[in-house]
Length: 467
Ligand code: MN
Ligand code: MN
Image (cartoon, rainbow, N blue to C red):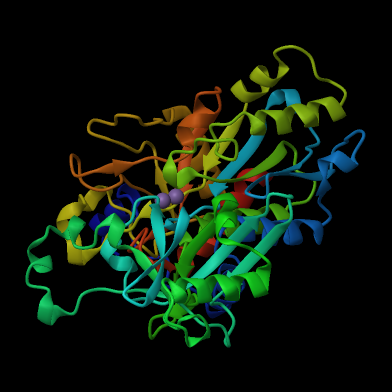
């Protein structure tokens, strides 16, 4: 290198891809780690399924329900499940919890289509289920793809039926129809956001009349008869159900160089998986390590399974009770002393849509963990803006542990924006920064991530807890 090149190397921010100069052994580790991730995605497509999978992983690593403990000591591993849809886990640290906790929080819910309370109807000899989309989607992306049905129906007597149709090789799948281009001249004049309207997202589920008979709504009757035989339900039982339609296709390795993962729901299951794997791999942390798997992030974190609820506070209070140190205001004091990585995905720079980003402050896939000092929209409105002192601490940990990272904004100024659960914990006094994996085609039925970034997320989360 010339003197000038040396000076440039010393003074410039590094922006190269993590794949450059990577050792074969590390590449193999990354690929193996991502095989586990792909398996996890294919097993768990909804928040209830995620919680079930995380519970299995936690139990096989020595975590137990906090209710099984009458008191806690350092090294104990506990979890708390909130209504089967969100979950908190902790490893009690060596140091007193009064000095704060280290939290990493991701969310298990992903954009999808939910069934309406009265979904089933027949029209022109076809049976359909009405849907109501959940989270921010481009509605046109959800037609003419294979969809599977996941969820629970709870009967008035409390009996719960679990439903999962479309994942097994021998299962039927379902789809939402779209108009053929030959007859779409009017539809094609619509704006893209109205290309498919909310009330046009109707799932086709049947076409045979009951007993081949010519009575009214015989196709709907036939569907209800099938559901009654299989699950013992009647039409009214849909009102007490939570049924979600998700892509029926599986997550896969992507690219000729096998460097990426394509799959549904990577926002934010990629951060759930990497943080849970990191938590399983730390032993005896100095500071109490806490992991959050939240629900309802995609619709604003409201409700008793969302991060806005106080159930997380209840979990920490339950820990304080069992450490036998609880007293008034202790919880507030702990939060003020605590640190958090809000583990949520970031928008990856897409050169095809370059004008939506600002190149110097975009997140690029393959450069490691993506950090957002702030999110928000229109002049940082609604943002939790991380304090410079805390940002320095976090990047210090990453640099010390050779974790590749980049700082980004969520797209060009004035074009849009978004948020995560960061502000909710920040409002309690916790130091929080957004820190996750960049994603291409975010919120689409098939999202893309880089295997390098997935592995760096795991490494970064582990380093944060071990610090
Ligand atoms: Mn997210
Ligand atoms: Mn999202």
